[in-house]
Length: 123
Image (tube, rainbow, N blue to C red; front, top):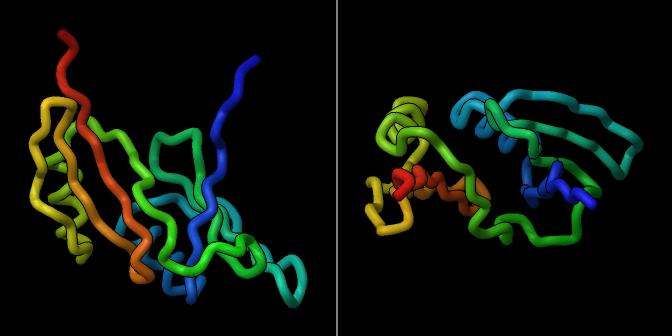
C-alpha cells in the first residue's frame, strides 16, 4: 500500500504575514485560501516541484505557533537556493557541508524551522 505525505501543518500567529513570507519570499505557490467559517481559514501553499503542500490557517492545528521544527526540502543546488532566499530577504544560514548533503537553514516569522538539503552525489 502506498502512503504519501501530502500536507504538513505549519502553526503561525498571523496567517496573512506567513502566507506573504512563504509565497513572496520563499517562492511557494498559493494554491488555496478559503475562510470556511468564523473559526476556520484554510491556506494551502506548495513549494515549486513538490507533491507535498503546507497548510496555514486558523483552526488548522493545536500546535503553538513556531513549534514546527525541521521540515526539510530537497534542492538541486544549495548555493543557488540560499542565494534565492537571501535575495528575497530571508535570513538563511551559510551552506552547511556534511557527508550526507549540503544544508541551508531558515525560519519563518514565527520561528518554524526549515532545512534545504542538496543530496550528495550517488556513489
